Image (cartoon, rainbow, N blue to C red):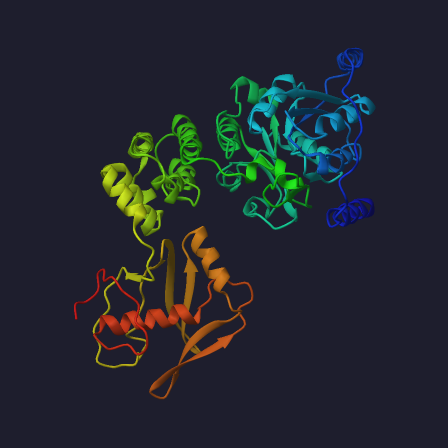
Length: 512
């Protein structure tokens, strides 16, 4: 095990280095050389794993990525690298590597604009029992191939995930829940694997080929999501290896021409129509391969109500389209309106819920008006339970009378948060805990976290705040949220509130 630790330390050290892009001066291969390579491939035994690598203008990082492959503790794999019409030295670097490694197959295709076609070309060539997708600027730990295959052998799973981490410039959201423990032969929903739809996983190739699963063409962002979702749905079960970090995702700033980031296709934006296509494609996959019910809705929720879901195509960019294009997008979105049910509506924040309701049943003018609605400084607080009137203010809590709303929804500008909070009596007094109901709300709370929770304590006839260290507990009371909660109670009881008063919409509150 000491050897593994030193490997890990060495890899981690390399990931923090900022080395200059390598110099490359390798010409295009001759026809004789290409024929020689193909002869070498035909005499090889079938590898257990085919590593698929799409490449586009990755010369600044490609050598570093290729170098991790000879370091693998298991060499029972082939590398299939498909260059998508790079304009830098990427193809030359690949051919140079293939000349030195018999288990490398290189193909070059005209630029397609996304990783989808290169991956599909590689899948058509692959001969391994499994396929694993590795991007041309990322890195993998030395034990990755060996331990992925070992997990598949132990479990018989059609899909095996490996723990991931960021490195480079900036960060991105990565799956965490599925890697909290080692997993063997688990349901892809129960294990939380459904939350990660990047293709950086190992798939049983016979399952992929039996169902002819391929990456959809025509858009550059999110084309991996239908592929992975379909693979999950067709698989017997999944496994995950999480005893160490296996896959390192390189983050780099979006591409300025001439910089290393310029080839980062996934960082580039795409028109609203393609964003809509991305979501509709995954929704179609889910609908075709699931029955109606809670499991289907769990898979659909991200693509209906998530930050990059259906509403992402209906933001300010939508207003720049001409009227016919706007109507076309609305008509396309309405094809999935039959899936918009009470469960999905209930889990959406109020802005998304209102926008999708309008999108599915309103006129073009109503959709445009809602998107164009000016961003005010309005802060909206909505309580789902009525508050009993009481003449005793400021707030007098007793064990027999306590304020206990089920849910508070904060809406600021166009960002909405579903935040539940609960008041409980303890030995030290009243404790108010705040919990985000969805991922966006949890991030909102974490961003506001000040390292303390708060307590309402009885002090004679007054109530004061006491604070203590809350660690990483997300059920934390934030003073600004408490202030707004107290204000809404004052408002409901017709008591003037001192200081600046935000605009408030009443919903289910006692009339003044």
